[in-house]
Image (cartoon, rainbow, N blue to C red; front, top):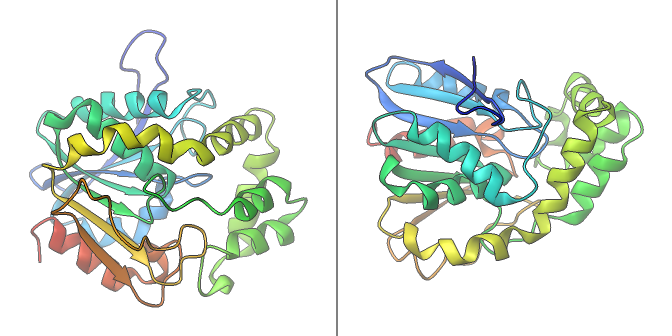
Length: 259
């Protein structure tokens, strides 16, 4: 479902799943991905969670137009969050976690808590070699090798997955949009730093893959979040929700009070 919040605004690409009376959660994917990255999480939570799955601008089913700064992405997501009515949990991965943090700072009263998987913007720089490999891939084999860096078991990246990402990178509108998003990644820490202290009252859970080579697990969470919890998933790289789904989903359910 595509929802246009305001005239001239980038439409919000949002799909709903699960019972309306469930715990409200909005899931936000990372760079060069889409809401399908949550397929195992969606299946596991479908009985208990009112799940909204968002495709960020430039990704998936969303419009190709993208904001020119993290603030714009945050405002886009904040509009979707505020439109949910009751406060929602934000479940977000990688670049999407940075967007979720910025959105939460804009509309904190609409956010019940944060579950951040392999988050960008918290002091761990996104590996520039990984981004360069995705942007430079000339064929599916090179894209598959680049995407494989995300996993401790690279063979999980299929040829079809690689072809899908390559097609987006080569698309006349999607390609420039994704390159514009990639240009934002090195500046995420600086963009988020002023906003992190205001989020301290929220329940915050950070989930890292122990073998993450794209954004290695942080040695410590921000000092301004004294009550935040850090969960490290053994045997997982940058996509623990796919590569180590069972322990990751158990952690998510516990954070949501569903364990």
